[in-house]
Image 1: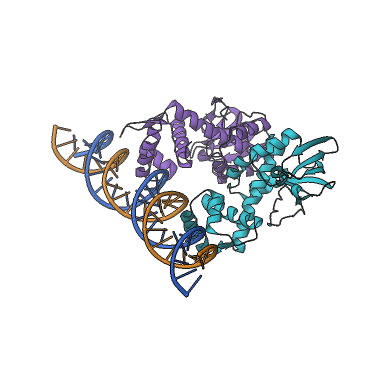
Image 2 (image 1 turned 90 degrees about the horizontal axis):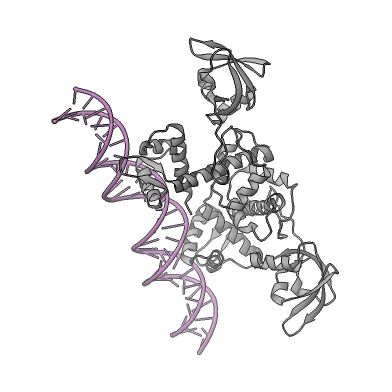
Length: 217
Length: 217
DNA sequence: AATTATTTTTAGATATGTCTAAAAAAAATA
DNA sequence: TATTTTTTTTAGACATATCTAAAAATAATT
């Protein structure tokens, strides 16, 4: 069994590799976890001793297959709990993260399999992130950033990169939700902001910063 | 916020007072929590400093109203989660305790209120224990031990004192469940074992030890 | 290539929660 | 009441996970 802290490190390492496909540095982990590099080094030794990561001093880190499996199971639990909170307990998508951060560490195979079943084996969580199945397999959507679309092109909103509650509430307010059809009607060169139409009904302007965090597929 | 360890101590102290109405000693807590008296003393100081218990050296311990409220909320969460596992996730009553021990420490008011609502505000958990409401109020059933019933008297099985999985599975096997009508048809003087009829259908013998752990109301 | 800057690791400290062994207090017994 | 036994507390140690400050290694720059 792994400690809560160990689980959080594995998850952070997994997510860093998911983003950049670069080697994962001590400092990157420290920043992602809001802790100090020296604490990270200590933990890397521990995880290495447990054969959850490959670690050579000064050389960065990657998950072993055991470590990756473990990380995927934590992510599976996190995303299933988020889905449960939204679908069964009327949570909004901006409220689920903090609670799921706690629930993801609950240890019970039966519990998570039953939650999965109750939700009818969802493939994606409320933010559009894929949910690993019980074997750790993940279904990837081919998506691009809304900020990368050309004028006149359109697609379906499939996910968000930023999970910050204030960002999510902003999307709610503007009527931007997963499943919406978004068409880029204009691109303002000056600040790269976009004029978009949502479901062919509503037009609005969004900043480049916002567009960078919306996934279109 | 209280640590996991602090929460477990508060719960243990609450439950000890619930059983015997006697002052709660350091050793009693140590035994209940399977730890050493010295560890208990350390924690009692901590809880006392947080104004969760009244503690004077060598004089035993009792919860402050703050401490009792906190304990009740932990017990509320534990019992609601047990109910959730049984009613929504097909857990058996002998499987729920270990998982609920983890879930009871999840911190989210909205989460527990929504679970309560989803279950339609149950008053008792799968073992017949009362579930404190969101204000900490508890509905007490007036029950007696099956071992205390006289010959020919009967009642409804309302709860169990022992939550040990092997005891609960034994009850399942014999068809003894909450809600059953149990009549004492004979008392064997030699070992105080009972002959009982269950729902006027089935007759069986149970030991005094078993009867001591069945609550009738 | 030598120097400077940055990153990473080590060394030693701190806080939490636990333990053993010894001391102190309370309770039981003679 | 004095003595013995039991209970409780204290003192000091240990493990986990964190931190700061300094040292070591690597990377960047002149």
